[in-house]
Length: 333
Image (cartoon, rainbow, N blue to C red):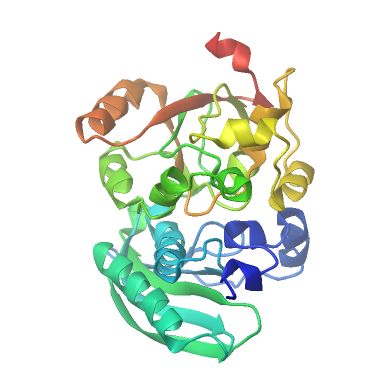
């Protein structure tokens, strides 16, 4: 019996194009000069944002990838979560979604039905509507969503706003790629990948963070590198929180396809950190958590709010004046 993952070369966000090559590619495009385009390619972010009026802006994103699990419903739910989370990462709320689908005709139609049904359920859970889409024939299955959301023009969360003195937080542990590649117990990884960042964003919104991005295919270090570079600051991480089984997989030599590309994209001052910890930091995440930069005087209140709602939150570092990305686990010792 052919499995979904048996039809793919690399699944989930590990299938993303190299971040370095993507930067080189987009450098050739002239940003559209539009007064109401609040976020476009200069610089690129988790989604585009277009201002409609003084109270409303549209958030628009799309995301799709090959299967990373064999269960069709789980694949549909993960793919939908990953796309919807881009809207939450910009401070917005989803409104409408369209499916982007490519499947071999040889696959039973019931398989496609399970993917679509699970995705539609997740879209509804995010408060949006799955209103259609486009499906083509392809030898390698792929599924995802184009999502439109809304945000107040003054409430957009860029990844380029981190400031010296900020504290850094992460709303999900890391290592989904490693755990999947190790082919052990996937339950914790699947739970993370099917958890919308809606609740975390709801708690975060009143705190007016300086910078936010969701941690996906470029790993924690890749997305922290982007935040540091675009904000003109230095980020020092002192913790790399891992899912159960992730560090063990890394110690056993497990690596995903995104590991090498992410290391090339995001050099880090490692300060003798063990390579298993580095592997978790570079691991391509699918539907990962939010990386949040906000003034350190708000850190205690933010932690209390997350704890009161039973939500995961880890303080993972700080923002300093300067440039570059560093990992210094000694600060936690």
